[in-house]
Length: 262
Image 1 (tube, rainbow, N blue to C red):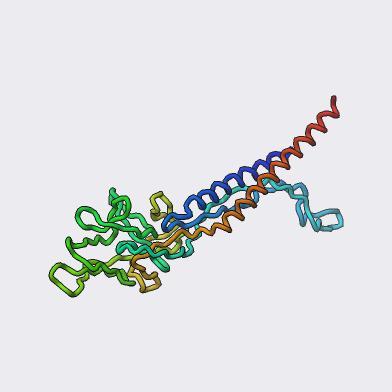
Image 2 (cartoon, rainbow, N blue to C red):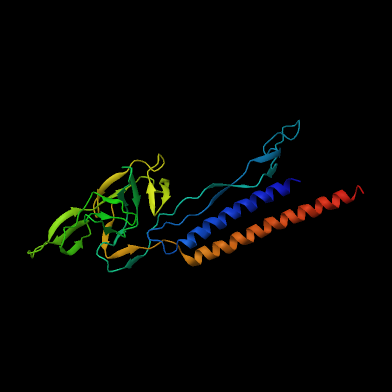
């Protein structure tokens, strides 16, 4: 019976939906995390009677047809790249982006990855790195024994050197954006990589040419809304239960039909 297979596709789709929702909830406190949603489409139809076909020799046209659907399929889990809430931390090297753009990170193999996670620190050479020790690009070094580290909205990094009273600019943090940022490939560790779907990276300066600005001493929180995720979880669970009920009903109908031959 076709209903068994149709309902099975619905159960599989809602199982994936729950997995995506659970990942969103799990990353509720992940800095810079962008939530996902599941996109569904209906499967190909079996056209028993095609609408618009000729219905008689007199040329009458069928106003409605008979189309039997094959169920549902998952076509993607796009990320919603909306702005997350900024949370103050008081750490001089914590930076939040307010608006468009990603921080550019150099990976150990020389390639680049991109992130909204601005929780940076320094390595043994004073260079600004992320939590995995990968260099922020362009490379910025904080002089030893310097003080008064400040990062303005444009990303200029200034410190006061020993024996001096006026700040000195020691680097410029850049930002990178993409034509289709939802086309970036997540690789874990809050990092994304370029893909043909994202388009080439466009490097620029914060607070200029459509890029967002930087907020020192803040971090961008995940853009996950708990109430919305719980509501979606309940809806997914109910949809799964209804598809399971269809399988149970179809099984009972098949059982009734088989009993007629006993």
